[in-house]
Amino acid sequence: MARPVTSTLVSVSLGLLSLLLSGCQKTPPRTPPTPSVAEMAAPPAPAAAPKPPAPMNNIDDYKMLVAQQILDANPGITFSGQLPPMLPAIVVVDISVDRDGELRSVEVKRSRNKEASKVALAAVKRVGAPFPKPLHLLKRNHKTLDFSETFLFNERFHFQLRSLAGPQ
Image (tube, rainbow, N blue to C red; front, side, top):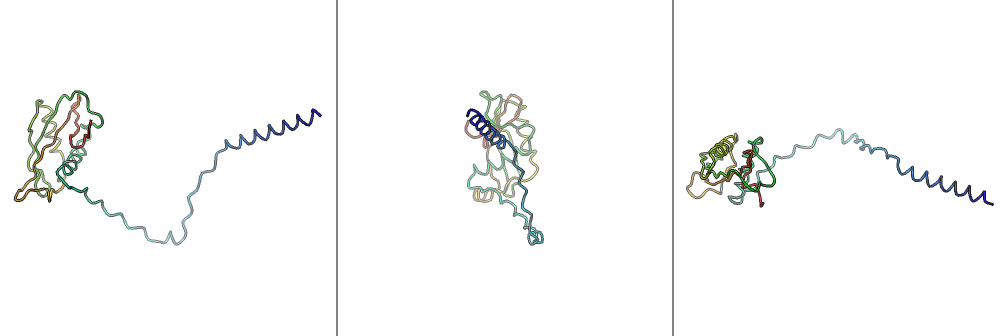
């Protein structure tokens, strides 16, 4: 009688082993469904319309758009993320943009570092395309929108812009 119990144990063990091994097999990759003849003959969908510019409800929204344009024009000299505990340079520039988004003037308002000032001025002037049109942000009878932007420099003289830096 010992023999049937042993063969039963062996067959149960083999069954469990095959069950475990079958779980390790890879499932075949899913193939995408084949398009129907009607789908292949249908004209392509129209291209998506270009994204409208981000809304500019106030000067802060406008400054964020301008700041992003400045960052995009200067990828090699910017940084993101946490600001260092001690900023070696902070430069505040005054920017003036006309109703068409053209840069009318940029000048250093406040700085203690001449090299950082040069970097900040060049970064703003490096933006090739016009800035967004300020439209309803212009005061009555004013030809330009005037605002300030703050450049926050790290030890390698790469910068973040205060309008995009967020709370630190």
